[in-house]
Amino acid sequence: MTLYTVMPPELIWEGLWKDMGAYQDIRIGGLLMQVRTTGPRSGTIVRLLDCPLEAYLNPMYAPGSEIEWR
Image (cartoon, rainbow, N blue to C red; front, side, top):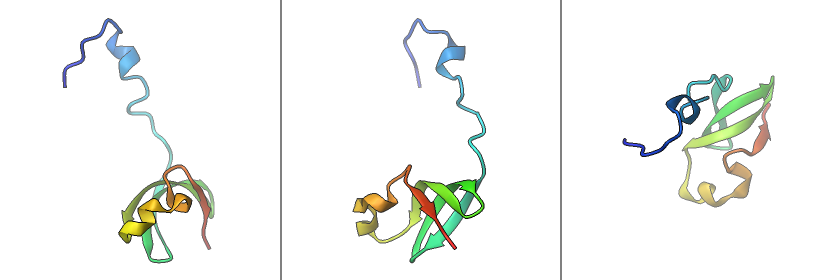
């Protein structure tokens, strides 16, 4: 990848390798998703890993959505 910019590289790549927290793979209702944990039984959806195609259209499972599991 080539970037043509006058911005310093430190500013462009800042935060790229920052640790974003612990991730877990959670299966809820037949959907396997990657979740960034925010509490002992709660988290934010990062991405769907294994699910039916119609699950991608459900706003409840959109990346960034908060979920809780038991």
